Amino acid sequence: MPIKAKQLLAFALFVFCFLASPSVYAAQVVTITEGTEVRLRLLEKLSSGSASEGQRFNLELDDDLRVDGVVVVPRGAKALGTVIHAKKRGFMGKGGELNIMIDSLVSG
Image 1 (cartoon, one colour):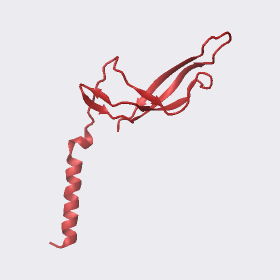
Image 2 (image 1 turned 180 degrees about the vertical axis):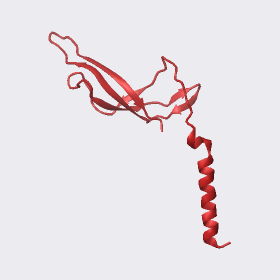
Image 3 (image 1 turned 30 degrees about the vertical axis):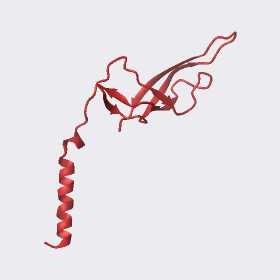
Image 4 (image 1 turned 90 degrees about the vertical axis):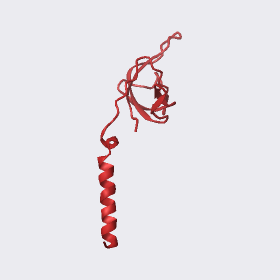
């Protein structure tokens, strides 16, 4: 068999094995129980004095997220959040308010 034919056959076999692998198609579903601590770090400044409702912001997973001792999302994974409510601080020492929602965490 000529060299080009062998290389083509080897490449075709590699592609077939790669595409036939169930891990390529199947995403494992993991349930994270309510109350699980998920540590996220803001990647930009966000405060009640400057934020506005609907504003999007970026976060990063600060620690590995584990379920039953197994890492399901590695540290450094990106997350996206939205400001739900922002109220600047008031007079006479009245504090501001900032309510946010974490929309997504991308695991890979």
